[in-house]
Image (cartoon, rainbow, N blue to C red; front, side, top):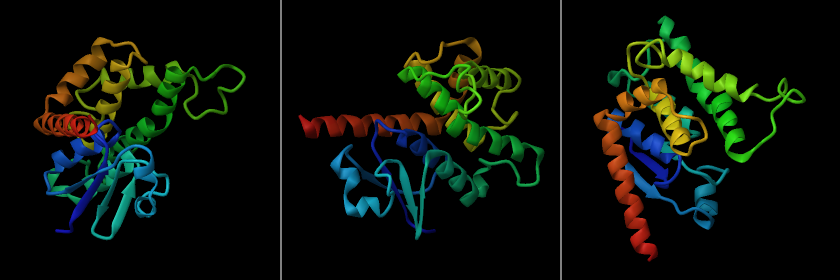
Length: 211
């Protein structure tokens, strides 16, 4: 098995990837990166020229971007059954919601968080369209089945649940029963609990070092 290195900060989107790594259940090495200069060194920019976390290096393969990392890990370890079979009808839904969360949903919730203007003057041009459409679309699909692709938990749920938890916690979107039930169902998984414990402990260690 190729060695896997995980570049992260415990208060970043790296928490999503940590959860995915715990679902996969393989050994990995953690490289903790500080925000700022630490992520802009030549050594790390060779991993991710954006100078952002998370990123992984698996053997000689480097993957950045949260949704891409989740999809890559699901495909690399098919025995974990975190992606629908490639020829199944659910595979289309799986791709759809991975890209939906990384695109329209994150743009819509960023617009809410930072007061970006999306109205009739520009709604046709922006990727998320009307903000409420992105949120309502997700609510409708999660109201029909226990997981985003139907009855089976997949890597897409790691992304959907993580983003929903963050945005409702930040009060960027109002909590509702559909979202709350879904978050409770997914975040109660053993891998999710382990990932949160690991990142919370790492955050405390980093605070102690800074003090």
